[in-house]
Image (cartoon, rainbow, N blue to C red):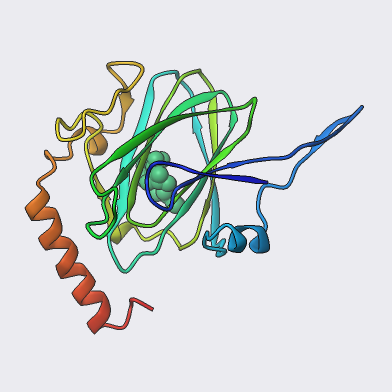
Length: 197
Ligand SMILES: Cc1cn([C@H]2C[C@H](O)[C@@H](COP(=O)(O)OP(=O)(O)O[C@H]3O[C@H](C)C(=O)[C@H](O)[C@H]3O)O2)c(=O)[nH]c1=O
């Protein structure tokens, strides 16, 4: 695999190196030793598929509050999508910056999204399928969100009027002070309850 740092600190594009022959190809998509050498987490606690029937679907922007350590390895295996990261880590050099990149079925490249970075995507074809691998388990009680069209970030989505969940369309405008207060509070709880293991 080839690891290519993205603008968002700690995020990487992970390209596959297909072994091609007359039948097709075989390519490694994950390896604890290679990920460790690239400075990426090596836990792989859950994997999931996201199927999106229609072009223009937006999922996100989602993040997890502490004590979740959910990093995501996201790969488009069918169709095409515009993948977006927003850095929500106050101690990061790229805090509040966002980055968008194309993932598609042809290159099958993945993006690694560190814990604390919000993630979302917009599909650019019908029947877009996304494969996820997470470094922590799903914790709905720790889910947080930023609205796709929040003026604070001005994400250049390729298509307007998305197909989107009511929950995702309804996140309030991002308020930096309120976010940082909540984050400090939740980090404090995680430490005092020992859940920040
Ligand atoms: C994320 C997740 C969901 N679920 C269940 C919970 C619901 O019953 C159902 C749909 O969940 P949700 O509407 O949160 O799915 P998405 O809107 O695609 O959420 C994902 O979308 C953005 C783009 C992400 O990066 C995250 O992986 C994730 O937040 O799947 C699970 O059982 N495990 C999981 O890890």
